[in-house]
Amino acid sequence: MERFDILLNELNIPVFYVKLGLGFLISFLITFYTIPTIIKISHRKNLMNEPEFRSSHLRKIPNLGGIAIFYSIAVCLPVFAYELFDLYKFLSASLVILLFIGVMDDIVVMRAYKKLIAQILVSALIVIGSDVRIRNLFGVFGIYELNYVFSILFSIVTFIIIINAFNLIDGIDGLAGSYSMICSALFGISYFRLGDYNYPLVILSAVIVGALLAFLYYNLSNYRKYKIFMGDTGSMILGFLLAFTAICFIDIFIDKKMPGIPRYHLKSAPVIAVAILALPIIDTLNVIILRLLNKQSIFQADRNHIHHKLLDLGLTHRRSTFYIILYYLFIIVTAYFCRHIDNNFLLVIILALGFIGAYIPVVIRKFRGV
Image (cartoon, rainbow, N blue to C red; front, top):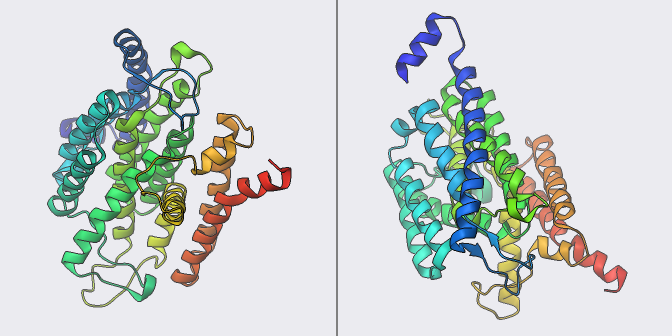
């Protein structure tokens, strides 16, 4: 691929924009043309998602769409953003492990503790092996630079939480895919504005957006024979990659040229990252709090997720997805325009708006007397 770069340079063709466009296009095409084969095999071998009490679907649907998303990423990244694998040695290994665990869980349903062990392993590989970690909180809670050991532990826990948070919002058509696509696009735009050193991360974001755009064509289809879910394979891979991009985003804003002197290019970077990932973070926190208040296990499945509350109002999957994404985009815009205020105050605003959004459907139901 380096020879390809040289050829484009000799022809005075901007290498980055060619890679960006091809990465997006080929990722889209790979996913778009791979999913029908996965659907056909899933129906033939009965590899389907079985409806249960929490399900918002009444019939069996193929749930291996995550394989197509992984396939497009695995093909496009080494071709168009090979620098990522030099910078982050364990990125490919982590993705392969998540693919294996995700497919196993989608087909035979793994025990929670086995998935957790795999997630800890993957998170440790990328945090310790590739040094992708949260080094500094920029003054949030009065904390700045983190101790190395605490930084590793905190980063591993962050990866695990976000991986599982994206799994939890994958409950209705279009929600996890659309929100992941928006998050990737926002991080990609941010990386692009921050300089050419971050271009491989921009291409990663474009590849994810391309894959998800093709996936959503089938996920939102009204025809049963074309419909597919991303399953745990897709949600875990997306959660992992968005945790990865969020941590890289935070790290970029630390001024490393003056060691020992706390200077930051954007002091609210950690809070902006939280705002971009607000939906899965808020939904997970809200569900955990409710389960603890009801003296239930935090691992016990229920219908307390934000999307369940909207479905209970009688909304369709598409409308529920639209309203949720619209509201959380409002939170992201708010965070962006308030990015220069005090970090802790901004974090309180983001969390407050997030929890208000989670309970708007409950208030509406009470007014309706449902």
